[in-house]
Image 1 (cartoon, rainbow, N blue to C red):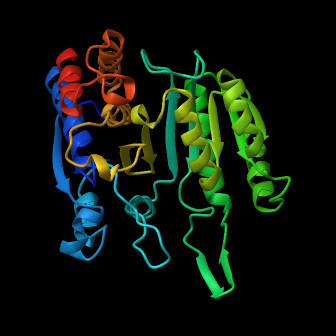
Image 2 (cartoon, rainbow, N blue to C red; image 1 turned 60 degrees about the vertical axis):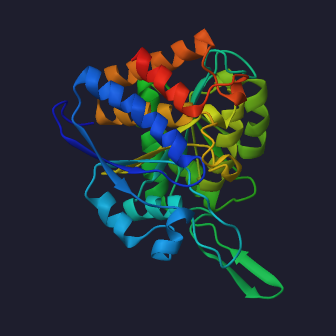
Length: 341
């Protein structure tokens, strides 16, 4: 993304529950990458999540947003989002909206010694991240009726679709739009129309589409068919977790939220409060999110070295967390991967 000589300021949010554990392991690995490749990356601590509510009265303090504004991107641990009509909104959604992080990017790829439904899986879901059913227009008319409004705009459709096609040009040149235009005729109808209009500008990329309910089946039957999948917010939220399970579950899943000028990188799993402070969970999703950050920065060689180290540890099978059948601690996995680098 930038010059190889750039000085980077990266905000670090540890988050809730297991967040501090996985972030600490990921920083161990990033420190090893920084040393090997002589990268100038400074860490800036910031707070978000339930753990800072008592101090600030909110899970996403203004102070945190000010810190993030002075950085290039953020590495974030999972944060707990409570349920209920009067509960605090998601800190993730707050950051995405504040920085207009319009593309949620979720890779799904087989890893060694990680059980998968099939081999030869390697596709990426690009989810529109700023509107749809997650626009926040969710309210009660009265005690008998509640309404949630799904917002679809041309601007949001165009930029996320273009991101998907640009990504496909670097991969296997195939983009699939996931929608429900047979039922949501106007909103998804517009999304589909824009998709095929933009596809005309990418003649070397195969473009096709599928209904979201059909895709949930085809992911299981023929996941190897897909390369880049683009969809709206709610559908993307659902099918990206299904896709993660195809390649072994959410413990190894990474993600990036990408905007024009800022980005956030975090594992796809939640805060798992029952394991707080136990140094137990798998940090590979967070570590692979750091790999996505390095790629975004333009440090592809460093990103490849990180991924190679992760695969090496998985292939050896000696340092695996409980979800992969091992007994290693989160921190031990981080140290082992850093050692390989």
